[in-house]
Image (cartoon, rainbow, N blue to C red; front, side):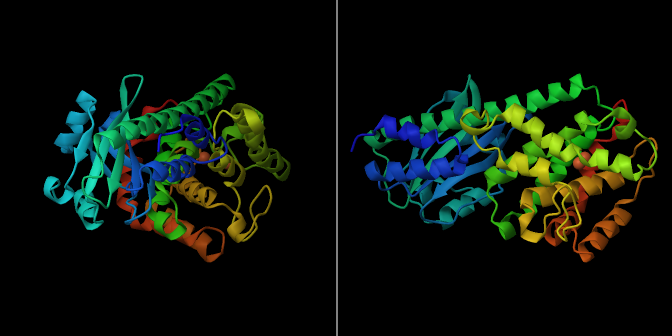
Amino acid sequence: MPVNPQSLLSSLNQQTETLTQRLDALHQHLLVSVPSVDRIACALYEAQDDTLKTFINSTRAGRAISGYEYKLADSASLSALARSGEFRVLDDIAQAIRSDTAHSVWLREQGYQSSFTVPLYDGGQLLGFVFFDSMHGNAFTPEVQRDLVLYSNLIGMAIAGELAAVRAVLEATRVARELAQVRDFETGTHLERMARYSRIIAQAVAPRYGLNDEFVESVYLFSSLHDIGKIGIPDKVLLKPGKLDAEERVVMHTHVDKGVQIIDRIVGTGEHRRLPDSTVLRNIVHCHHEYLDGSGYPRGLRGDAVPVEARIVTVADIFDALTAGRPYKQVWSPTDALGELDRMVAAGQLDPACVQAVHDHLEQILTIRARYTDADVEV
Ligand SMILES: [Fe+2]
Ligand SMILES: [Fe+2]
């Protein structure tokens, strides 16, 4: 059956859906014409550290792999594809893939017999790869390949569009921050650490809460915007060195609702949203001061009403606030900070799994802390 580009495009352009949901819809569509494709997965390429990381997948048969990263340079065949822009057909996976990387072992275990790989580019830069896998041998005839290249281009466009939207939002908030000249209250390194701590926690709790790679990536990208509303707080409150009095605290707490307003202005609402799926971003900004026992603000949400992306960022933010040096503040040792997080878990305020993630990945977290110190930033 020929591909119908019109309905394909509409399944990819569903503005309210995540990329994972859109890929699922596209897979459904593809199965009508090519029933033997059991899995479509995309890995994203990060040029900065030459890594490929699992990003979105739609898996009908076999177990999905997630939270996996590897160096592009470690795969000679993918590196060659990235350079040449050619496609790769493997008609007999067991024969063709002999390496013992976690990914190869996983691939063999799933029972996929053949696969088709297409590199994706955006403006000449490598964006990542699309992998099509089949439980059948020789599933990728030249005719099927032709169709799949079309699908791959559409997937590439959808991903590139989404990433461009994310970049636009991050850039707009950076400009807003600079215009308000409030660099003093949050250093660049705080934001860097926040993003990385949040990603570690998100990845660690992903199996428990059923979070996919796309979700983890969103938490990573948006966690640093949690306090964007502080640009609307007057300096005499925001930059006050000592403790805030009751009245000042009320003013300070408005940074959450102000943040949501800023995000609405930047992202847009309703039909004209710049960012197809901004739920994670909005939840992080709106709920990063909520506690599970209902004692947080602004809404005093309880338990499951506090979205998991906000629980993650809350733990990362508190840990960093305690362990990072500020001119007028005493710095806690990581052990003391962990003790404080444990105390807050016992009091029913923080998510136990998120705090456990900090315990379990402390070494990684301390490496990040050492790498992004405030010393090299003007405070
Ligand atoms: Fe905040
Ligand atoms: Fe913060």
